[in-house]
Amino acid sequence: MKVVILCGGQGTRIRDVTDNIPKPMIPVGGFPILWHIMKYYSLFGHNEFILCLGYQGKVIKDYFLNYKVNTSDFTIKLGDKGLVNFHNKIDEKDWKITFAETGEKTMTGSRIKKIEKYIGEDQTFMLTYGDGLSDVDLNNLLAFHSNHKRVLTLTGVRPAGRFGEIKCTDEGVISEFNEKPQAAEGRINGGFFVCDKRLFKYLDGSDDLVFEKDPMMKLVNDKQLMQYNHNGFWQPMDTLREYLLLNSLYEKNSAPWKKWK
Image (cartoon, rainbow, N blue to C red; front, side, top):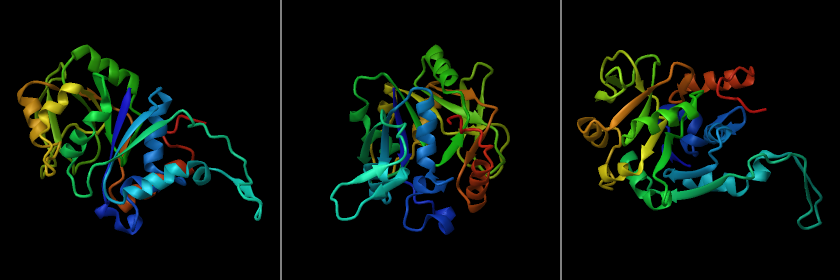
């Protein structure tokens, strides 16, 4: 199953860290946060990624085009062309990554619409943002989505306030979706989605289309948006404080999302 990751952000609220690099390339423990997200999905067997590039997309391309060099210790003997001895094994050799240029200033809804052709014949795909980490059980998330057969499932989480609020029925059918109100209680959109291909019918492709506004509101009105409740770890990286928190968790070997050796 393909995993679509929105990678176009500039990280304007975390400028002390993001000068000249796209937000998904901000490092956590020496690796881009994007790498952590991909590594987590791969633990559940999802190794085919579509990256929706925007601001400084070339940085992301260069990182993966030179992946072995960027992630390995190696010895090079100068003067002997091509003589490089790598000292690390690459565990991610089965990853397949599509790099899609979706526009530097394009909004989230349009970025998703632009990669429709790369989904192929798959009826279902996964979607997330390139700046948040979680220990959500992706198998349970997928099973929940498969059982209700609606267009979109989002993961509802309980962080500290400053985000939008979701209200839903006991069965999980979302009845209200408010993106970043002044004050909110309850769960918010954690950004780990499962999507039916019918989602593309809700996206008109205009560059200013924000996925979290009109498309989601239409899904709510059609009773096609469901919430999967996640009570575990979830943390975005929007501020310097959150950057320091994620790095501290990783460095102390207490990162809840790091389930690989």
